[in-house]
Image 1 (cartoon, rainbow, N blue to C red):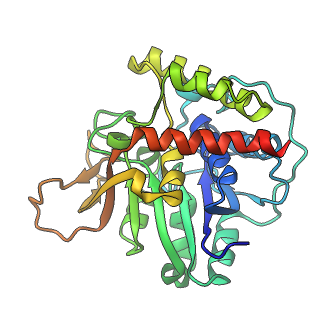
Image 2: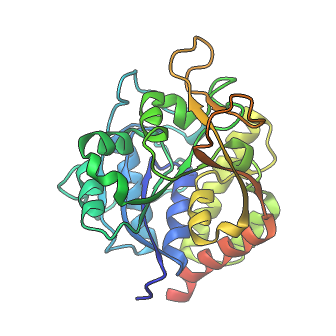
Length: 315
């Protein structure tokens, strides 16, 4: 196994775009997916965990461990996104019940163990609410210097759950505050960036042409996701938010980023869950987050198509 593969743990709440992020990670040789942990977010924890197992099974990820994590935010009441992802959290494709089993240990303990045993070369890729990551940081502060980077899908300079807040941050802003103030190198993929990663009908045709069980699964995901984004937001495609984080781990040159100061709002009546991005430097505070702002669309989809095609090659 090549030593330059980037080791990642995907902490997720599948979720259509979470599923595609997992498939991208497992289908590209530049990253090594050493584990998947689940959290409540797009749907309740039991549902997101089942969805993660289903994705592993269709992709043949028999050796990738899946650990079940937090069912509730740190403080506030749980919210889910059935309007976007359906009641199951991954509506659209019809898949059999998974036979793959979850680990016996909690996701937080799995994350801590893997980091403490590592050489400081593991990147955490949370694509849902940050509850598991915050709990791990609080439970075992010794993991802080062991984390290579945290690559977050969340936030932005505008919201999609409230006018100010993006869903993942809003669901557990207290957890996000812990993570953003941890001192760990952090890259943020907010809505400003992820809305540029749009799976248009033309992109979906390219994926359909791969003609494999995995590509058919992705097409079904995108059909449902595009429909809900059209109904709710008026989009003409499906934004693949979470896959952007994995893509960054594969090839950071796909993105244009800036180091900026980002604070998490937890007290505002109308701004709870907002990532307050100091784009102009008006606060004078030190930059603490690498914020993704631009995307090389052609390179992004070329890498994605290659990764999805790799599953047909394995058949």
